Image (tube, rainbow, N blue to C red; front, side, top):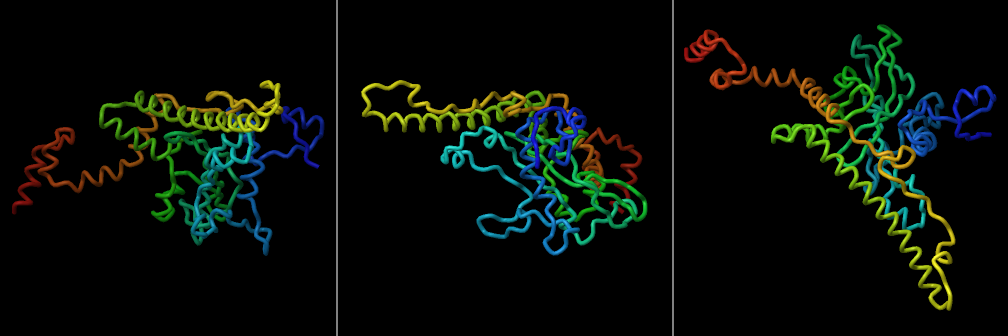
Length: 327
């Protein structure tokens, strides 16, 4: 029998009580409802076993569904708020649920090989979800750890740069984020930083934009929640309009949970990274593409290089190259 207690894990060990927890320890920033969502909904998807062989992990249903109205996807999307509220389900945590990106590359290559020695990698347990900031909300990436047991004994996270670069190009381009040590930014946010930097809007302006978009998304959810409750109360009022005496308390025969605030750590738990973090991540994204930028510069003609003083090309080398091209 599984028992749920909102108390510390160490105390539970002393009580010798079995507690069903997710595959990772709950971070301090993660609200209880989100941890429960990972435990009860996401974990069965990534740890489902094949019916024929219980030693082999099965692909999540979102990978194998080929119906036209529900195509295969890496993403697990939350339910549409309007549909949830139309069923009179007034649980705010359902409306809070983020998108989940399942990054399980071992299902999409014949053999997932070690980037260092080329030997096959073995799965070594699911990693803690990584929170990634997008334009108007945040999503989480879930992947596995991989271990080279046959040769070099190297360990790789599923989102590590070396492992990503060893995958086919079309799979590399499907990965949606640039990650730091504990968090990350989506490709959309990185593109926004690049474009903003080109048009004299630095990380400060981009952070203001992200904060505006994130709070707007929260405000829309909150407005939908309040309007659905209002419609329910108004409907009861119309049904009881024939009564001679009534009060507001007669319409509210049940209480509704508070929707909370944007920054409430146990409700919506909204988050927007700092200006410093945005600047660091923009620099990291540029550095990751340094090799491609150098290759592009090397392919430019000498006359184009000569127009830019920042290359600091020696005039002697320039004249020598130009004379070789003429001859």
